Amino acid sequence: MYDITKWQHIFKLDPAKEISDDDLEAVCMSNTDAIMIGGTDNVTEDNVIHLMSRVRRYPLPLVLEISNVESVMPGFDFYFVPTVLNSTNVTYHNGILLEAMKQFGHVIDFDEVVFEGYVVMNEESKVATKTEANTELSLDDIEAYARMINNMYKLPVMYLEYSGTYGDVEEVKMASEMLTETQLFYGGGISSLEKAREMAEFADTIIVGDIIYKDVKKALKTVKVKESRHK
Ligand code: 1GP
Image (cartoon, rainbow, N blue to C red; front, side):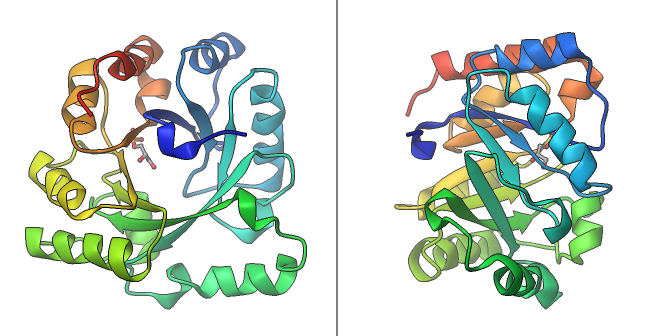
């Protein structure tokens, strides 16, 4: 079985966006550790199943990061479930989860489920707007969230989500210093190997999304981060 704790690099594909067969093949055969399917808007059963069946031709782990109950389906290796800890709306803490448990709790294989403690950092991002996240966070706040996730909620993953913008290394460093058990995911604005390396210095796993759709060649270069890790 796959060991998520060893994953250093993940490509995140948005089911609402178009990707050519050639680009998809390049991404899937790039030596990335996994493909994650997930997005904020317009994630539907139709576009998720379509993308899943295309990615399934390739021999690497496939994750669905759940954004709504309607687009959840069998056939993935893992289901990553975000809980947005700096959301001001309980819906995004455990409200959607409650509905999901009521509908599907009896059929869920919890060995396939990974609970992600999200901290949304980019005020301008769709995810920040949708989840009504309080993104005005100091380093002390990040330290506290990291402790909360690692020592109290004891979640397997903390996801520092800068979606669409490149983050602040000091913030990522702060989170990483607090985490002794929890795996740190970093996502946002990685568009070069240099940026990938800079964040991988502190994050266990980096997530690369948007650049796949803007410049796939640049996206592919970020996978080389796996060869140059210090940790
Ligand atoms: C988005 O964290 C991921 O959920 C990746 O961010 O799209 O900015 O690469 P980018």
